[in-house]
Image 1 (tube, rainbow, N blue to C red):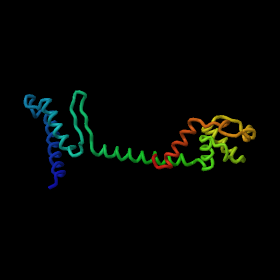
Image 2: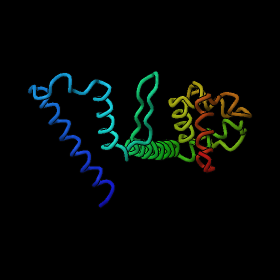
Image 3: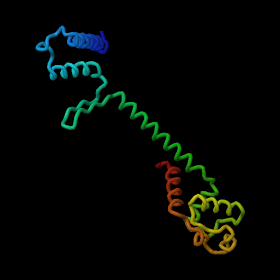
Image 4: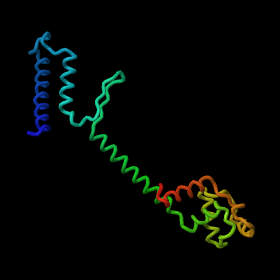
Length: 180
């Protein structure tokens, strides 16, 4: 016979005896001098609980701050949920970080690197820089003033990347390198 099934039988018998005892006390069949004292009842309840849940316990601590009980199955489920949540967080982060078009990402990186050339003055560039501004990745500027800025030596002198833009580039680069 397996230990778990034997334990189950013992728990069922003890549980039945406890119920019979409680019924006998409440119906007056057991005189008050023959009844279990509180420490004995607590010990019996602890024994019953230990037999019933003993294989599930990973920690049982009795101390001045109270009783601490940790169950293996709950800890395992919590660990599994935390691992799944971490995987999901990484997937969502990668998805978000890769939603920016490559050309827009490259333009943001050029601004960070203070690249003086490499910008093609097109309606697409104006749209991308405006989007980067609206998303908070570059400081405020007027799209109408871009034509004047275009003739300057370094576009980054006029369109400055924000801390959020720097953070975006850093995080995306860490994900691309596989360290995130």
